[in-house]
Structures are given as structure tokens and as C-alpha cells.
Length: 205
Image 1 (cartoon, rainbow, N blue to C red):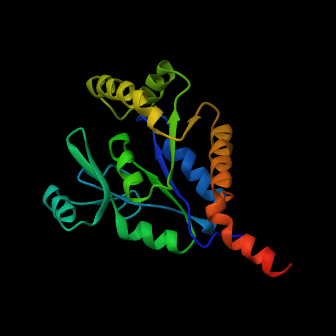
Image 2 (image 1 turned 120 degrees about the horizontal axis):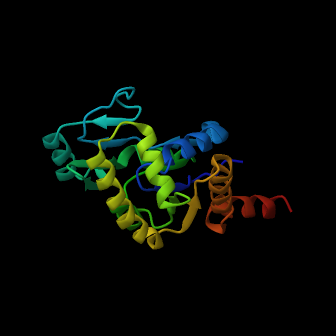
Image 3 (image 1 turned 60 degrees about the vertical axis):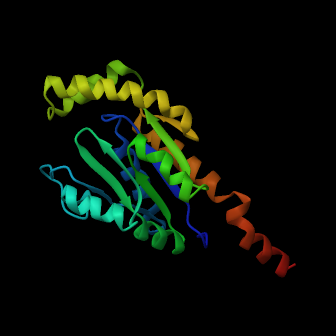
């Protein structure tokens, strides 16, 4: 059964925690019932990425114009770049009854609740800081300076995990995916999403 009103899921994690991998597996399981909101960024496109798939890539001036026009659900600066979520696609997908995932930075996560207070916020953590550093080094994409910087940012982000509704540890991938699926199912069964079902049962009594 698909809910008439979709469920909004905010996902944040320090760089290297594997949040993209976890959510991609969740999306595979949910199929057409879910969608990933595509964020907008001013950072350069990386090898293997594609416009409108990983991000919408824009200039700083274009990004600021969207802010001025009130087009952004949330936005934040991370390092030297801007990241943000266009609001219209999110609203459209929720109206279609889909579970919508926002994979966003911690700084922007709090802003979503101001517009969508019913959103569920999930913070993904690594099993340890040592493992996080190993994963960052294993990617082979960052300089030593960048890795040190990411580890410093990770500590700051972990301190803000208390602002989230749920914490999921990404140690064993399948277990992390199962935990996220459980959160989604619990959210879908909340009374505010099941009122149509209650009315349907009473009508057929």
C-alpha cells in the first residue's frame, strides 16, 4: 500500500561513512515507491558523475539567484562550496506518495524541519573514527591535508548527531540497510499517514 502523502527522510553523515551506498541499496528495495532528491552544488563535477544524476551543477552566482528567488528548501556552505535542495521537486514527489530521501550536509539538515516538521532525520555513523579514516584513505581521492580536514569536520558533525531522530551505524552494509528500512516502515505506519486506512476500514465495517 502506498501512502497518499509521501514520507520525507533526511540523511546525513560524515564524509566516508558510506551514506550514498546505504541509501542506494534502500532505493533498490523500495523501487518506484521512493525517489532520491537531487541536490544542487557549486562544486566541480567529479569523474564518473553526471548532471542531474549526482547533483545539479551550477555557478555560485546561479546558486545565489535560486536562494533569492526562494527556490531552495535548504542550503549550506561546506568547505568552499554551496550545497542545497530545490524545494519544488521534493513537494511534487511527496504529493505523489513517494518516500523521498534528502542526502544533505548536517548544516542544512536542521532547516528542512522548519518547512517539513514531519520529516524523519537519520544520521549515519562509522563503527569508529579509525575505520572512517581507513575508508577515506581507501578511496584514494583526497590529499593528506584533505583527509585531516575531513576528519576534523567529521568530529564536529558527530557532535550534532543528537539533533537527529535516529542513528544508524554503517559497519555491516546489509544491517545498515535493514535499519533504514525499519525506520521507513515505522514512519509509514504512524497515524498521520494511516488515517485513510482507518477510514477505509470503518467504511467497510
